[in-house]
Length: 283
Image: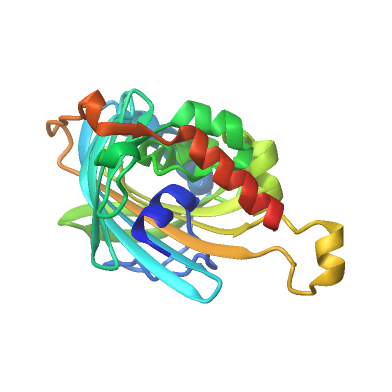
C-alpha cells in the first residue's frame, strides 16, 4: 500500500468508534443545560460558513488507513483557499513525500516513482469527472475541501457538547455530531458502502470557526459476483477503516495554488476509473 494509493484510492474519512484518541487537552464533560443541544446544532451548522468567510487557512491532515492487514498513516500539511477549494499540500507516508495541488477542481500529484507517460513528473485527476465516473468512488480522491464541507451535512439530532479543549493555544468547544450520508455528493451510492450516518467530531473556536475535524468511517468494498462467491469463500466484501483529522490555523494566510506546466502532466482521470472498475469486478 503506497502513499500514492492511499491518497488517490482511499476515502478520506476514518473508521472507529468515535473515541477520544485525538484529544489534546480539556475535559470530557457531556453535561448540557436545557437548550444547549439546539445551540450546539446551530453552532456546528454555521461553522462551515464562518470558516469559509476567512477565505484561506493553513491546514494539517492525518489519514489513518487500515485494510487487509496493512496500516498506513499519511501526514499532510499545506494551505487551502476555503472559498474555492484550491489547495497546496505536501503529504508524507512510508518515507515517501507527495506534492499535491488542487486547482479549479483538478488534482495534481507528484510522487517518487509515479511518473506518467513519457516520464512526466506530475499526474492529474479531474475531480468532477472522477466523481461522475466512479459514483461513491468519487469521494475517494484526496480533496481537503470536500472533507471540510462535511459539516454542512449534519443532522438536527445527536449533537452533543463534549467539553472544552485547547488546540495550538486556542480555546475550543468540542461537539460530537452525526453526518447524514444522503446529504453528501453521491450520497445514495456512498451509503451502500458506509451506511446511512457517520460520526464526526468538530472543535470550534470562540468565533465559531472549525479548528479541528475528525471523521470516522468503515468503507465496504463491493462484494464479489455470485459465481466468485460460490468458488471462493473469501470473496466477502473487504473493509477499509480510515480516520481523517484536519486542523485549520493561520486564517488569512497566502495560498499559491497553480497548475504545473502542461508538458509535465499526464491525465490519469480515465485510468483511475478503469482501476476502480477492475477492483469492483474483482470484489
